[in-house]
Structures are given as C-alpha cells and as structure tokens.
Length: 61
Image 1 (cartoon, rainbow, N blue to C red):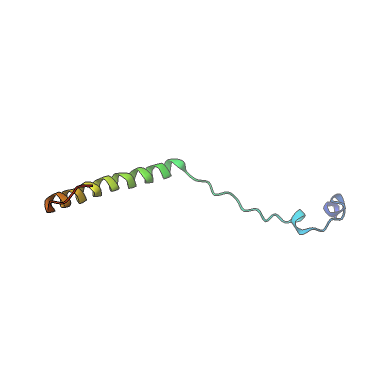
Image 2 (cartoon, rainbow, N blue to C red):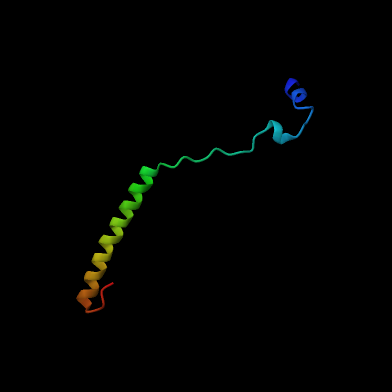
C-alpha cells in the first residue's frame, strides 16, 4: 500500500510489473570462432569443387 500511495494511487499495471525481457548476452569470441570455422570449410569445399570442375574440363570458380 505504501508503494501505491507513493505513486499517487496510480494503479497502472506497467508501474508495478515489468514486461521487459533480459538481453541475451552474445559471446563475440565464440561467434568469431564459428564464423572462422565456417569460412575455412567454405574454402576447403570450394577447392574440392574446383578440382572436380578441372577434372571435367569445366571453368573453375
């Protein structure tokens, strides 16, 4: 009751109940490692793909 009195008897729900969600913390180091790993896989698969293209006598990417 003291809090309601302190707020001028304003019974607006948002004054007493927070609807905000906590921010998700992102580990940038982990994200960087994943992206680096993905890029390395892309490079490796591109090399493999180009080897097949070369073997078939097609234009290499």
